[in-house]
Structure formats: C-alpha cells, structure tokens
Length: 506
Image: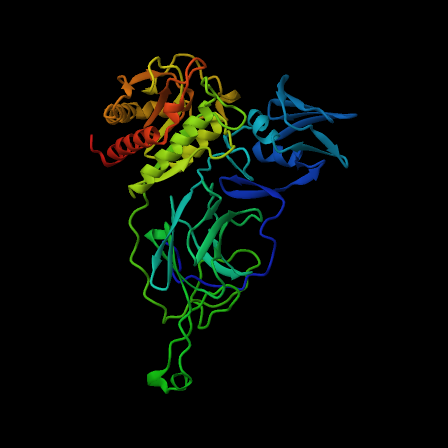
C-alpha cells in the first residue's frame, strides 16, 4: 500500500523535459549514461556501458584500435569501423565505432547488436527506446483511459504492479512520479480525445520515472487518488467552480465558502499538505488538494485484459505481393487495424499493436513488446498462396528439435525460446475458435487448424495463433482480400473468437 494516499503537490523547479541520457535499469539501481552527438549519430561511452554488464578484466590499446576483455569475452574495435569482433566473430553496426577526445565511444546500435554477446547477465532492450534492463529486472507497464464526469473528466492509470506515487504541477502540466520501479511503457506517448486532458507521456531521461499529463486548457483543477494497493492512479480533472457573489464570500463561519480546488498547473494549492511517501531529487514541498474537494470516485474495475495483434512485415519489407500490386505488408496491416477496432468496440479487452505506420520491428522486438504487455491472447497476421481465394488458415506453434537459431552466446539475450510451450493447449483452443467463426463467412475457404514452426509464435508467453490469408500470389489479383466488407467480416470473426477465449466460452 502506498504510504500516503493524499498526494502532495509541489511547485517543481522548471527543467527540460528530457536530458540526453540513456537509462540502464539494474536489479537494485539505475544508471544514467550520457549520450553525445557525433556527425548526427548518437554515441555512448564504451567503458561505462561495459562496466554495467560485466567486469572489464584486461585491455590492450594501440593506435586506432582497442582490445578489451569483459570476463572471458573478448571485444576488438578499430576507429571508424562499422563492425566489431566479439570472440573473433564479426558483428556489424549501423554506424562506426569512434575514438573521441581519447575515449572510445560506440553508437547506440552497439547496445543491441554486440553488447548482449559480452554480457554476463540477461539483457532486455527494445530498439528505438532510451532504456535497457540488465539482470533480473522485470519492468512493469501500465494502461490509461479517460471517461467523462460532470464538468470534467476522470483519468485512470492502471499499473501491472504497485508503484509509489507522488504528484507535482510545473510549467502548465501535471507530473506523476513513479518511485523507484523499472517501467517499460507500451505507448510512451498517449493522446486523449478530451477537452480536459489532451495527452500523457512517459519520461525517465533524468533518472526519475514519471508520467507527464498535459491539460486540455489552463486553470483546471486536479484531484488525485490512489487505490488498488498502488496499482491504480485516478484523478478528476474539472473546471473551477464559478466565483461566488461578493456577499457570500463575506459570510460568517457558518456560511464560509469552500476553498477553490487545488492542483491547477503552475498554482500552489491551499491548505496543509499531508505526509508524502517520498520526494524526487530537487522537488520543493508544497500543499495538497483541499479537504473540501469532491469525494473520490469509486475504485475502477480490474484492468482490461490485453490482446496483442501482430501485422507481419512492415517498413521496407513488403512481404508477398499480388498481380494487382497488393502487398502482404499493407493487406495484413489493414486487417490488424480492423480487428483492433472490432475488439476495442466490445469494451472487454485492450489492444496493443506490434507495428503501426512505417515501423518494421524485428521478431525479437515484437516478442518483447508482446510479453511485456502480459497478454491473454496473441494473433499474428500473414498472407500467402493457399490455392483457393479467398481462403484462410490458422496455425499454432509446432516445436522443432533444432536449437533456437537466435539464441545468443551463453543463452543470455533471451528471445523466450521456450515460452510458447506452456500455452500450446490454449493456443489450439484459440485456433479452433478462430476457424469456427471464420467458417461462417460465406464464400471463405477454411481448413482445420494446423501446426507449423512459425517463428513469431515460438517466443510468445500467451495463447498464440498465426492467421494466413490467401491467396496472395503474383499470378492472382487480391482486390477481394482488400475489400472493406471482406476485412470487416474477417475482423468481426477474429474478435468474436478472441473474446470467447478470454471469457472462457469454448
């Protein structure tokens, strides 16, 4: 339970929202590593990074080259090279290694291309993020939503584990400090369709994890509350009450008006502040919301279960294509969006997409995104030659005896190679429900669920199924597969099957 449910407001000193750091989360600490720009590329100091994942045992430096040992692992670098050697094996980088002012620096892509091979403990990292988790660190995440209330909106943030929360107002925004837990946001930036709360973003670049809430208009009141043993943060964001007539303001003690609500960004609240659980560095003490504020809203229902949808390919990888120019990337991307809409409209699940827009996450990045969300179901979409058209097939994972090809040395950079094994029964249940629903679509060819060694299913720690649409082939047109009516029918069928699995109705 959070030590103080009455959340304290401070006037937090103005500071940049981000600093140029990379954050490393360790089991009992977190470290900020400075990032420098060289030729429009972001670099981090090599020795600082290596010290976080192991012990540097020896080092040989020559002109424009460096050989260094981390434990028993050997790393060779040459100034200006776009590759390094780890235990005498080449590892390619997107940008060159540099020697800058007598210190060796490596580009950010070194962190996920080479560092896991040198580490003496597990590493979790999602490309494009500003943080890395080292050792036995299980980051938590959160979901958020807003709902209308009288004269305002109700914001709810639900965390996967308890957090210690304090709040502040600064520079026209509200800040929720999240204690010392490691977090990996699924959606670092959220936008809300609300005139009272326009957005929320995660920031930890100064070493203090926090959520920054942007109000829709200035001068709003902010009444926070914490429940669920620290798993749920709520706030009522409302318009200030209309000014009272002058004579009412001069009334005696019996008719004394209530104090205005506290928490408007940039304003100090009135009244004495209750004790707070902790204060982040540099924060000044302020006051809390007044006791005359509206009663807190009842506790929200439990967090909605998460369903992850994975549209295959993406970015510069179009996948397969048809005679009339339809690509697998665009076909399954559109279908995943339709399924998201159908699932969201049920109000029974929250949906996470592994890719949107031009993104093309790697298989490991999709695994990490999925498993961090702790979903109740995972569906990956693909398209190929199924003979008849339109047709659909559903596959569950078929384990092979071959070793996992993506396992790093010492088995440290884990792509959850065995994760799906524990969910095969429920995965088959989901596949059966999918085929049952899809078979009801007139003119759509279906077949019994099958097993296949699908890479994207192997590492998913949840019931997982691959859906393949067909036929997508260079010898055939695919206009029928892209039609809005067809995709809506398929999306509704998938949503009904997934919902049935979540509710246990099978």
